[in-house]
Length: 148
Image (cartoon, rainbow, N blue to C red; front, top):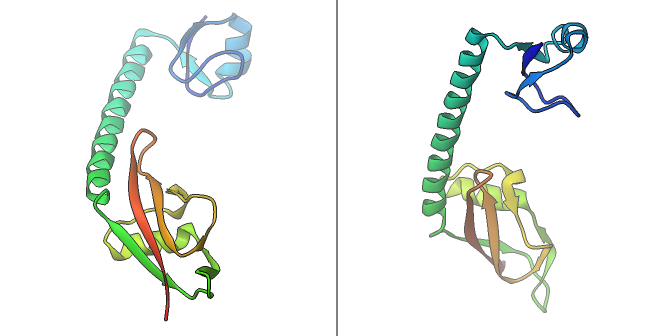
C-alpha cells in the first residue's frame, strides 16, 4: 500500500514522504490515526502543492527577517541600572529588559529569541544576538551604565 505521511512517524518517515508500507500497517495503524493518507494521484498533487506553498511562505518570512536584521544592526541600546562602587550591578540584565528596550525602539521581539552573553552583572558594552528566523540573526550592542 502506498501512503503519504501527514506527520512524522518514528522509524517510518517524515511529513510528506511517499512510502510503500504493509497493507495491515497502513490500514490498521496509519490511516485510522490520521498519520497518513493513501497516495493516489490527487493526494500526491495536493501534497506537492502544499509543499510549494509552505516553501514560498518560509522564503517570504526569511526575507522579512533579513530586512528586520538590517534595520536592527544599527541599533545601540542603553540601559541604566543601580551599580555599586566597582561597577557591579544590583541585580542583572535579563532578556526581558532587552526586549523592553527593543520595543521602545519600535522592534517587537519575543524575549525567548534574545541570546545574552552569560549573566550581565557589570557596567560595560555587551553584544546581544537576536534570533529573528532559524537562519537569520541580528547583532545589537547593549550598553549598561550606572544610574545616578
